[in-house]
Length: 137
Image (cartoon, rainbow, N blue to C red; front, side, top):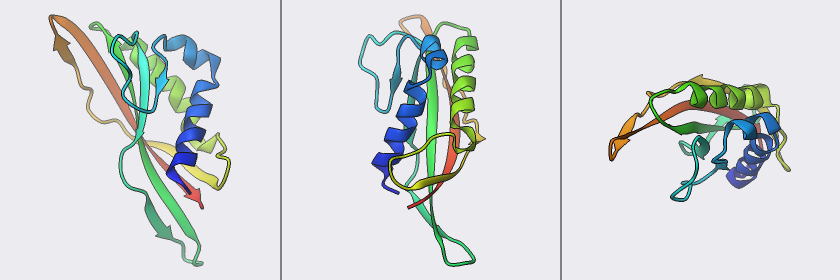
């Protein structure tokens, strides 16, 4: 599967959910959000190169890894985790359809460490999840 097709499908399922959008005044991004983007916001990106896996029957599966991150401002991570939980519900079990190819499996496979930062005395939080997405070309 073409990575751009999968990225478009992921964006569509996330951006098409009114509940998720209500949790994210800063929106959904597949690249770095612009400066002055409101918080919280969600960013997703491919986190490794696609891997081709061959089945016992000789079929080919293309495996992707995506990182979904929610950034927020302040000391609490509650809003970020609420948005991440909603994104998880949307992305789990391949509940989205690309324009070509087929999603066979989509599941969260890990939580990388949170990345708190402080800039000019203002705390920022970033929470993450990694998804494995197996596709047919």
